[in-house]
Amino acid sequence: MTEFWDSKYNSDQYMYGLQPNVFLKEYLEKTPPGKILLPGDGEGRNAVFAAKLGWEVTSFDSSKSAKDKALRMAKEYNVQITYINADVEKFSPDSKFDLISIIYLHLPPGIRHTFHLNLFRYLNPEGKILLECFSKLQYANNSGGPKNMQLLYSLKDIQNDFKDYNVEFLEQAEIELDEGELHQGKANVIRLIASLS
Image (cartoon, rainbow, N blue to C red):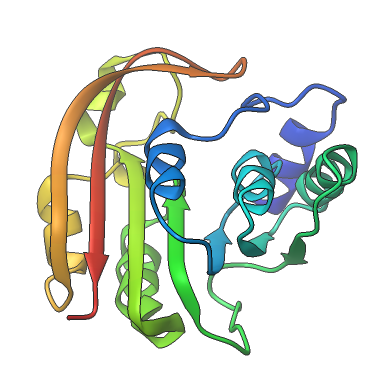
């Protein structure tokens, strides 16, 4: 899978654009900055935006091409981010975070469930998790996301994964995506904000 993403990101163009995800952007703009973790962060658009707002950013992704582009973008915007090449099954941060933001990180069911369950280990007591993912309804759309039903999520999947968290916001929505070349058009997503208590 790393080879797939390295190949996809191996161009000068930012495949998902330079602007942050809208759901994350709106949340960050009304939240005092702290420490943020961005798993599967890709080319760095969300990391750079958070850093511009004063967040202390740690991102990780398995793709070296993505890391190189993210660090290049950070340099262009004169912000500092920490970006680690790591797989979700092996990543284990040394510190805890005020926000963990998971944007379109689509994993096989067993890996997804374990990863979501273990996020509490990386959260500060008052920390939050923000997630946006494609729902199974996205399979019928051509606006982005995996063309593998096993890698798309149902509302029940997310409810089950986060059943031990305090779910503050959960919705299944139809939105209009405008995120670079690969996320364009009508999309079906699930959005969540959760905390430990």
